Length: 90
Image (cartoon, rainbow, N blue to C red):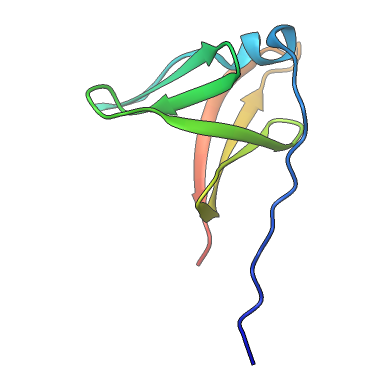
């Protein structure tokens, strides 16, 4: 029996919807940069090649090829993005 491939849903986004996610996020000495590109979002630590983000559900992104990790964006009481969490399965 072959293993089941995990297929993640991809939700389309517009440039206007992606704009609030773009920026620099930091926790102590760790920095993560999310950039708005013509075709979507990319992100990663400075000095490393950025990886493409795909929207799974509101404020939840995944990177194709990394099905066990999610990038979750947090919002304040006014609805503005004010944080970023990387959550790994296990």
